[in-house]
Image (tube, rainbow, N blue to C red; front, side, top):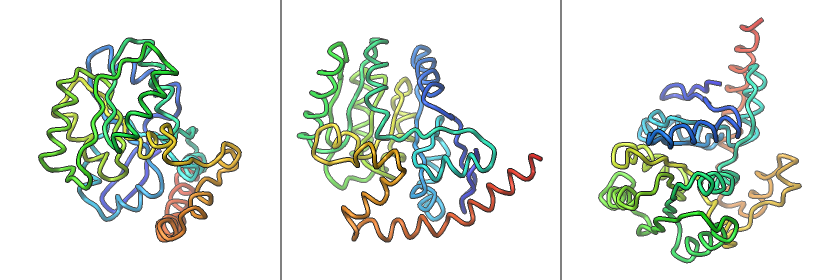
Length: 252
């Protein structure tokens, strides 16, 4: 499914978990790095106005649907796409890396969060190899020297899969740079996922997520931060809905 932004199109090119895991396995077995993004409405808002973010996103090899509106719009357009949230990627990918014997890197967040999430993951998967845990300085420039140093540390560690936990657009910009610096590493942008694993942030309960109400849970929990974000997301929905309906009509 292709989504239009003011900067240009962005394609959701991996439709489900199974295909994503197969794609990642194939690439890493061939020592071929990649960048994986999880697109949602907030990203589409940012992509409209941020050319640096769009350029970084355009360099990503794999894009999945993170957010029910992305799934629904794709289905309206006639494309079967499954929900693949970034927050649900860490555990299954770590299980896959443990099975394949591939080491990982955890980059982003605080040292406390990194240590707690690493302990959680190695308890779940004792054979999982964590080659690097790195917490860059707060507020660093994703296009600056600190980001380059972090990426070179990832490359030197030998990790073939790197989880970036910074939030958008910083993590996607870093992932795009990582493709040039750590060419055999796959970069996966995961937002607050490590904080969820560490217990320093609380995710919406499973029943809330099943009802597609995680956005409301987050809004109630932090109305000052989330209200404007969601207002901007809702504002772009009609245009994307119109395009999805147009695509569907063109298929008949």
